[in-house]
Length: 163
Length: 163
Image (cartoon, rainbow over all chains, first blue to last red; front, side, top):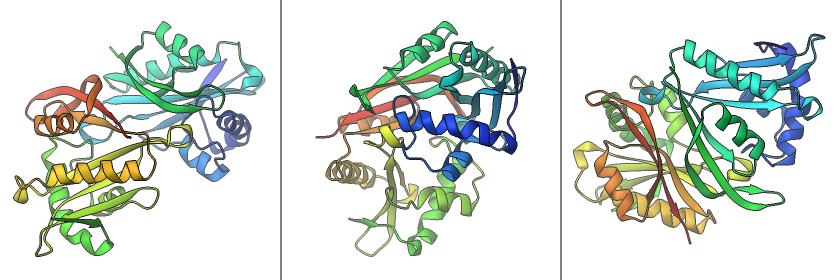
């Protein structure tokens, strides 16, 4: 698997699974009916943000990640990141590889820590992955995520210091 | 004191103290050298966001607040808000009046709770005000705010349910 900077030419490969993940409404605090232009401008970031894709040896896009300062100004030394793996290519370790890549990049860029602001507590696969990579739950906003099947569930704020 | 919707005609009154507060770098995670157009587009919100000013009987702008969904989509039922009081008009209860106004508005709009994502723990006046109005600290991101005098200090995530 290769992880490299995303370009505008990757967008047609990203958009179908990004749309599908948003439409499912189970994991992201993005509009479920997100339109393509909105999605593209939210996902393909300019510096100091950064967007990457993970690709298979044949070039297939397996997943994508974006990284950005979590706050501006006096809070810009904490990195945030978001990850999407194409459900048709799950189970290949793409999510873990993308999170590890984001941690390495953020550390090399001089960020002090990584913070996720809104991890649905029902997204147990992601929560377990992040915990296994050293993240802890700093707090949980009660009933802050409206899951289509499970109703109102908590949103974890997750955090890991970088060295 | 009157609290009303801000219009573009209020901007010349807001900008000097907003710039001063950002430049001080002690309370907001905005760039300290924020330029006017950036500030204006960040502060004067369109629906579903909303921006208000608090004015004295003579029309002087004493402070301002903005309110907006804290997340999109499945997280859009939690409101966030930010408040700035002109330091030249502090001590008149403007901050408290603006927070109370934001809580009332968010409740009437059907939001379930209000969340602040980044309250510098050194901003003890704001933390005490929010606590007195029923907010609690859900978690604190360690060393997430670079205070110009106190160094790296925590950022509280604060929360209050709305009824």
